[in-house]
Length: 231
Image (cartoon, rainbow, N blue to C red):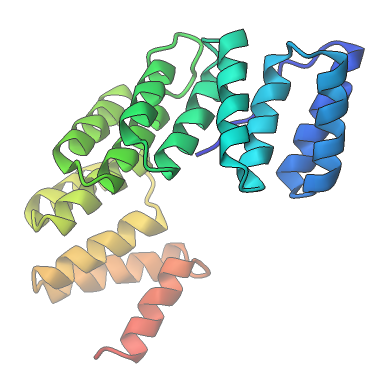
């Protein structure tokens, strides 16, 4: 999960803000032009270096991206958005240990408004590295930080489901759904768990909720496709 930067106040930083905007729109060439101009006007702008890191990453220039992220953090070592985005980069490039360290720096930063998201991202990173026990710990921290954060519930329950801890996964989802809005991912996962437990009544319940509450979602379409092709 990427984050945006927003500390642009001076006139010479407008190109940096525009560059980030074009980057978010996918207009990479214009973004490159704007960001390079901003950098020439203010070489020590951490936000511009962080945006260049994102740009280089999209362009497949991994070494340049790594250098720009590190430069941004050298200039603003506690910036939570850059910590998070560099962590995403590291995890996507097989550097889970480093990525998790930066996620946790972001999570423990008092300026970071959503530490539960950083802990969840750290868990996803660890899971991708097949370090499931450590991933489960991060998902638990995310839930402790914000019990209503559905993505942490989903990730923890999906980890349990793939580890054949079906009852534990389903109980977590059911408890969450008692007091929080459902999401398509949670309802589809609950349906899959109920099927694995050979509980057709529960599967029908979750499937009906998914189709009623999120009829146009990809998850509801996946359910319809399964029902049309049950084999």
